[in-house]
Image (cartoon, rainbow, N blue to C red; front, side, top):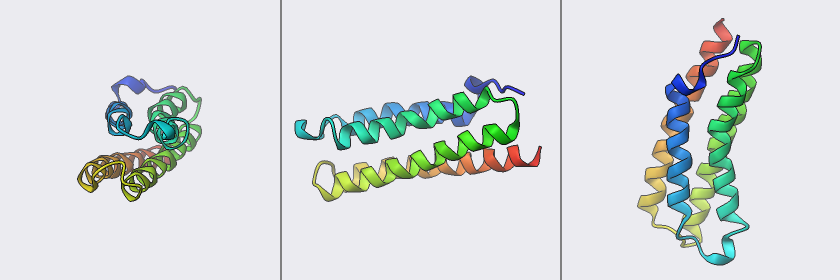
Length: 119
């Protein structure tokens, strides 16, 4: 049964993450535009997009698969943020703030997956 994804707090938080990652990556060097900048933005965009796509599935099990992809994209965002720090593109504090946001979102995604599995 399809879900109203725009009403899901996890989707709303994922949308916030996509916006925050865009801001986070704005200061990356120009030569990273098609590499790390593109990668972290695509990963962040993937989170709400997969939640929305999964919400349209016929079964909760199918939805849970899309939520799993969204969770993996969160891991990708965290890894790219760490790489940005190690390359000297952003301060550790900025990355830590983003990682905290992603951690919270990841917890929500795990909770959603568990909820869908119980149905």
